[in-house]
Length: 285
Image (cartoon, rainbow, N blue to C red; front, side, top):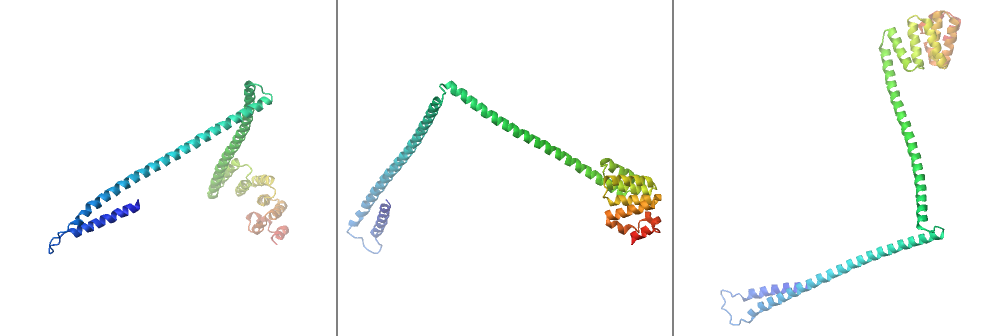
């Protein structure tokens, strides 16, 4: 088809060239031989025939392509129908085989098959239901525990913020009585707060309530026997009450529990009455 088109183009070009040659020039006289003028109609006829032939070939080619496409679609439909038929046949064969096996195993009727099937389905559903109930129960318990942990964590955070705020207020407070009230608030939140007991004992000592300070220091020691600052505070109270031997013994225990307190022995104002004692000098040495 492409070669025909090329040939037609060549003929058109040649016909144009022949037509150009047939035009008379101005300076030359007209020729008497007019035979070549008959070529263009023949060429045009040949071109029209070739175009007609090309159109017919194209229509035939299109019809052939459409026929092949139709055959391909028909083959695909046949394959799909054949596959569906084979699948249905296999399903029916499986069902028939299963029914035969059920009859051979003693299930003589469809009612027995139905009852057995219902029994199996109910058993399976019961097992699945119980399994998922256990999972849901475990999940619910975990969610409850997690919620409780979150609530407790929020309460701890709130309590910690409140305790921190009270400690900040106590650090800025200059009135001893107000400090004691703040320490009482801390002990109300956490009765086992040893630092609050020790700071309250120190405030009571500054007020001259030495017995009160001694009692608070004893409470702190009862809660934690390894807290050196509690023995230090009780030593201060004993020194103020005149129990010098008990004070020196408490100083020794305090330094043993917290060695850094040894640097504060000489600078502690509560121990001024102990400076002349040999035991106290030994502690300084």
